Image (tube, rainbow, N blue to C red; front, side, top):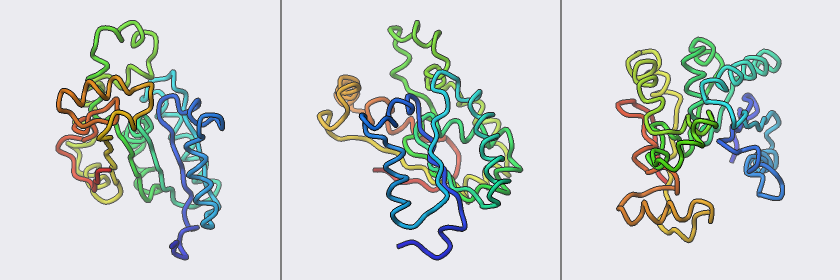
Length: 219
């Protein structure tokens, strides 16, 4: 049940890597489905976007901040962000770029399946040629942003306070390989055999921002 204040905010759904493909109607349109649900509940100001999957997360973060600043100035409504996968990196990197704006304009950030520590799967040598040619995928490599987040967020009191007050992290895993998309089912099976809970690409333990304080839940 929505409160009367629900339309005091504007809502952003930020897709992850290859979100451009996953948002196509023939695939499932996973961002638009969430938009449809909110509109049926009476929400008006909703934005769905996936930043260029070819680009690194830190490059896309600048574009994200520009978009958020423009929409905040246009509507004068605080922002609630639902980010998925690589989009979670872009949001936090945006926070590092423009902390004052985020503190003033962003009401809440929900990070779903965040690759905060990157994926150990991508350390396999088979991915090396692809990582060199694809900065966006390289952003998901193990510990790619770990030091940046450590120094830029965790060691700064104002950023820690922001995480504590405004961020919810939703970690996910699938117990059964047959319930995972066929594209990543083999990886899920291997990780499961090794004793790791995962969503098929990220282990549950890799969806954590070490030493940071924030609300979190596991699905």
